[in-house]
Image 1 (cartoon, rainbow, N blue to C red):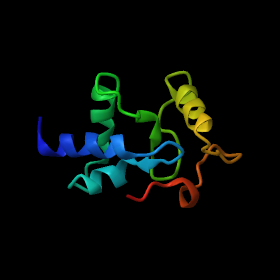
Image 2: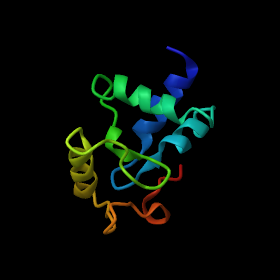
Image 3: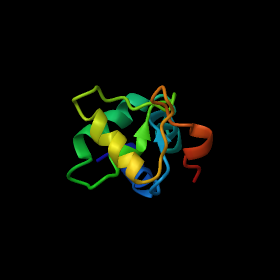
Length: 101
C-alpha cells in the first residue's frame, strides 16, 4: 500500500461523528491536493474492509456524491443520525460541519 493511501485512511478514521470532510480536503492533507478522485476510489475499495466512516466524506459543495438509490439515502441517513443538517437543497453547511484537524 502506498503512503498516500495510508494517509487517506488515517485521515478518514479521524473525522469525528457529526463532522464531514471533502474529498479534496482529504487529498490535500494526505499529500496530493489534486487527488480528490483517488480519495473516492480508496473509499470505494476500502471502506467496508477497513471500517472507514465513508459517509463523512462529501464533495466540495457540501453534497453527497453518490446517486439516489445507489447509497445516497444511506449516507444522508447516517449523517443525519450524527446531527449533520441538510439544507432544503440537500447541501451541508460546510462552514458549520466541516472537520478541521
